Length: 290
Image (cartoon, rainbow, N blue to C red; front, side, top):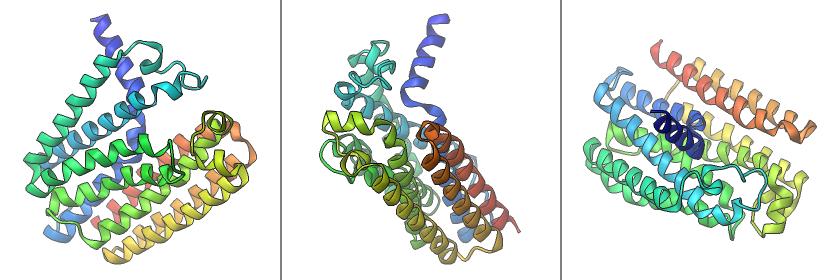
């Protein structure tokens, strides 16, 4: 039993399950919005709730494990990554590949039981999720690729409920994509010097910290624009727009924290962005309920 608990702890550390807080709120924002617009009720049923969670967890586990597998050679020399289970030997190469394969299979099977569009999209989605690990080795656009990996969350939510991809879901997707890309640039400031030595193409490594901060702020301004357009396209009301305004304040605070002290990047990365996603969901929920 003790060994089993340790295995679960190692897997949790591998995929950093707590970071699911970034994508999950936006899957459910899309699902409740789609259900309300289509059926005049936010509740889309237990079946879709369970299948949606299974899809989200398996897709994210696949993406994180694949990233850890691909990054082993660049994580080993990096002091910040040296204690990862995929690096220190707690999870071996064979077990890691099995974990990747099992989660990919779960994602495809669950997508099949949602609807035909979800099933057909499951294959290119897995390819796209794995693509981030490759892009970072040759292109500064890796931050945007990562952003769109999480931006697929609202697309998935709308597909699950509607079997279609409406305009408002695309706008929400773009907002999430630039939100994630923006804070990923800030997070990459921690590894700026290492990325330079390793020849990786993060924006901080290529252009320096000041330019990275500026690009991140532009991305977050674009985020707010797309979320405003999402509210307009889905005909949401006062509380939804208030949620966007508070999101803008949180993002401004995030940049203020990082600009003053790079050692507080973890606080800005996880705490503020985690609160933002949950807060945004609550405001959309409130707006749809009234």
